[in-house]
Image (cartoon, rainbow, N blue to C red; front, side, top):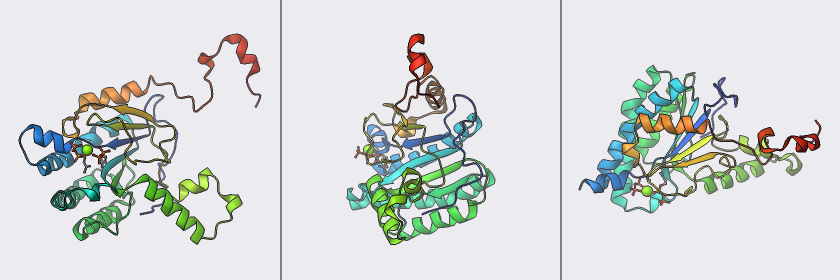
Length: 259
Ligand code: IPE
Ligand code: IPE
Ligand code: MG
């Protein structure tokens, strides 16, 4: 779904060290349940309950956008029973939690395709997005049926259909054709569950994101760990391929490109 940029859509940092956009690969729900001898679906139920806590921790810190990778284009390949269970858990969660999030001025945006979602989830997501469209608090992007490659292909198709002159296609124009056109690229991507891979998440947008992997399973991620991760982001030195003054000897600085 495409939405318009919000008035808070600024890449400027709130504080010197606070990420504007934090994205999560919410992994580990199944293992969390299995460790306790429970069906995997119980892990997904607990997983969605953690979302409120994440928003309540990050919003006061000054974070403006949170993206939650909840269901990938590859997750359709799971056993039908699990897929159906996840769709039910998500549709109930979106339907039940939207009013409270709206009260808190949260803007909900779906990133991904809606066509293949189970109808209850599709309706709940569309309604949540409509209801909260003008909210000015934190933006919560929910990635259901999201895949980075599918998103890039869809952008290419739409650019061609729009008859865009190839010579005018630059990074800024291309970004406007992505599901995330309303927000800046993620400053920080946090993956729970111990895996050290991106699993088709925000492939274009993660070009210069800081990455953080934790063995903590998603339902166990608490405010203390989350605050620590966001605070340690402040000590990362982002160079975007260039050099910061502190990376250079004083005598080298005289050869800096002149602007
Ligand atoms: C992540 O948890 C949520 C989804 C992919 C829907 P998993 O279900 O992948 O949990 P693990 O990785 O098997 O523990
Ligand atoms: C990534 O988790 C997708 C989501 C969290 C929605 P997966 O469990 O699907 O990732 P892989 O299969 O371990 O790469
Ligand atoms: Mg997993």
